Image (tube, rainbow over all chains, first blue to last red; front, side, top):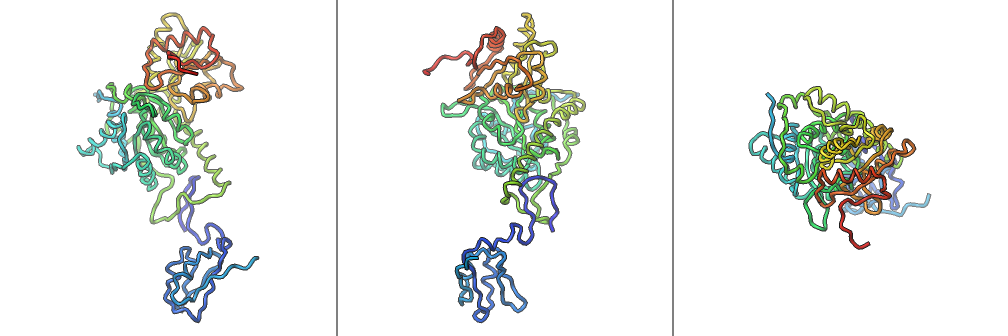
Length: 90
Length: 388
């Protein structure tokens, strides 16, 4: 945890979800197929939000609380293990 | 023995800046500020200035570089003038909102077109609302003292704001006058080490300038307003402390000259205010009970001081600026200070735009015209009429 400064200006201290659950901004949702995944971790490297989490077995899972649905992971996946689908209306 | 040097306002400002030992100076030359940054460059060449001197490609970059450096928690200095100041405009707001005490000299110069390098205060007056503290100096000694005091004030934990030290083009920037210079040790002891309120630090990562919601943004503005109110209390304290340590007093928020029994008080800033002292002496000889209140800080504005002055006197304001569509900026501010608190008569003059000379004779003439009491609106003194 970062030391807090005693000043009123725009400083953000790093923590998970500092801006709230940004997954609510999503229009398209990534669908991950474990069967197709070759554990290359390109999705994990390229996700700009750190929403792709690496698991112990080398596979991945996507944290939908923070995934904004940008689709970079699906675009980068060479084996089409991630596809984007329109989010269902809540 | 006192160390007195005779030099121009710019070289004396450069001396003061270097003695404050800023870690970073980033500047771009512009007439009439050029000799100031040239002066600092000389101190780099001689080895007297040991900080980082960045020759940037524009004034916007100069202010940006100072903001970046200041955000790492170090002391910074820059200087500019006129169009250079205007090019900085976006980053002036940035420095103030980020609460970074960047210290800057601005040499008041005309804004073009109508290319003109002489004295006019419209450049800094148009930066009134950026959140910067603004001083207006009227002698080279005051420039030295104010630059050093500006570091003390801006870096104070209850202020944490950038400070602009303004003085008129050529009349001060290029005119030699004597100034007493304290020893380096005295300045070191006086200023001490800068302790930033916040800084960019790899050991303590933060994001700066991130998105904030309306309610939080409002708090940032309110905190800046409190900081200006704190500065208003600190400026007189710093001025008195300076007098105790160095034996000189340039006034605090305002400098009062022969105001004790005055029935009329003239308000002005910068070089016109310095010239006014001669006029006051001459008018006193003629029997006028008149004094001068030289406004040193335009932001924070010395409202309470002006209300006190207006208790028993009428006021005359001379502006070397014009807010087109209304009137001179100091005139407006003085009148609004008095609202609901005093019914003093206030007369306003516009004089010296475009660097037009304003002599003590002119000032005496303006004062006499105002005292006669026939002025219905702002008077453009000594003006040759143009088409309406």
